[in-house]
Length: 212
Image (tube, rainbow, N blue to C red; front, top):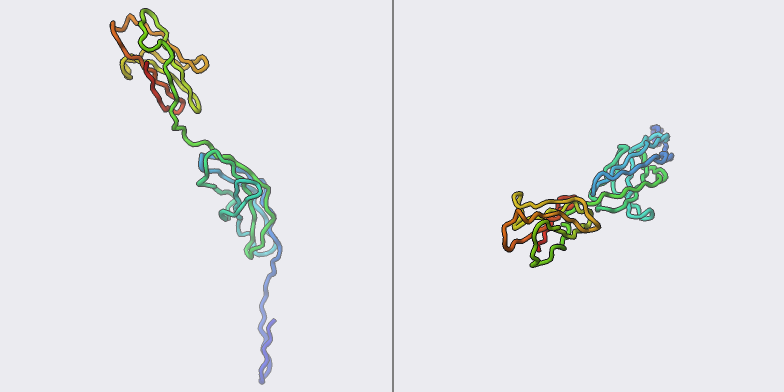
């Protein structure tokens, strides 16, 4: 109540306010799920607020360790997409609810998500094994190349002269260790010198070639 006094008497003005010093409850059931190499999605169960000003939203905390969380955003929803992340990296998340006058809840339990690996752009390695350079061959000959990849080799194909559909001798997806072999019937090849090539393709469709 506000009372004003002057020489002619007094005048009184009144108002009513609600004091809210009550913090919201902490968010619960926080989950973090990686959806790509650069994004993870969060979801949680809503907080409640009984202080009168009402629940206003949530502070999103993120860090590269459980002890280095920092606020990155706010939202009034019970979900959030964390974007612009590094590939193959584990991120830690937590939440703080806040009400209409700024009271904050305790920090929620943490959740973690590891982003997915980025696209594989590294070609496989392939080297010719047999027959050796300048060999003289006849009849059925086993062609062998060694191939490795940072993820996985998908197949190795063998060609005569150049790489095209018409010059394909054979291909294989079944290695013995790192060695890939096919049989070549030289009766189908003209006499004389020829170049043999091996084309390795990994499971992301990157390729690399090697010749005798």
